Length: 167
Length: 150
Image 1: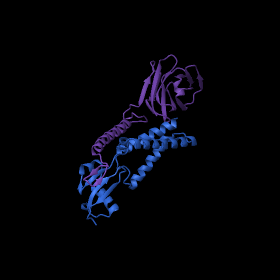
Image 2: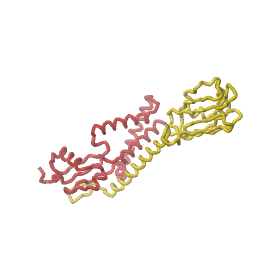
Image 3: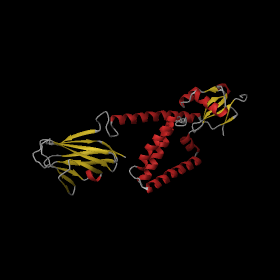
Image 4: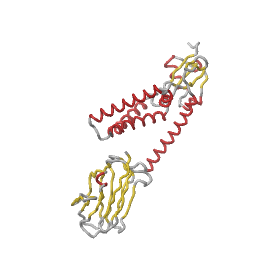
């Protein structure tokens, strides 16, 4: 035990405490940066910048997919598909396997008429009576990390959707 | 396995976050500090158990948390430096009656806090009756009175 002023027995290590203060202040800055990135939207579930909302359109322009780039595990998320100028009353959409194995599909609005499972994915058939219509998929990720799958309408390009899921 | 990882991550996270906050975090025990503590506890609970409300998860979690605690206390006992990193050490704030303002500022302690401790612990009336004030590693301020203070 060290002795301070020859009377006070204390294990003070002021140089260590000084470095602690420095590290603490660095920690405060990191905390601030985390909050800022959350406000901007980098941690999912909304945000001031639209970094979270991503939109892709298929090459023939009949399908627009709006999805959330950053998700959180077990937190609800939305995938919106807008169909434009479609000629058939029963459009089909294909999703590759990861869409339903790495996320739970809570609800599809409107409910699909028919669901078919294939070797490498799932095909939903919807009933629509207008050429422009919107479909909403409510999902919850069951794993964390990267989730990647493709969405395709027959005769059009396969669009790759990538989500990053926080634990 | 998921539960155990959650337990370890949250244990380490809370340890780091409270260390970053500083010694005086939540020790002033004002009403608001108490409320804050409750909110943090409530938020932590969600992260710890998630959707899993099973008894197994609770038991596993308790074992994990207590295990972490034992492990860390063993490490602290074995390595002095580790203890210093985790807990910090005492800091002299008043040295032979002289207030060390730079340290007080860094630890967010003011004269009123020192006098509060001086009153509570020693029944002192004035700052000049304080010989030493020490910010202990648990965040409390201990006071040693001047020899002639009465």
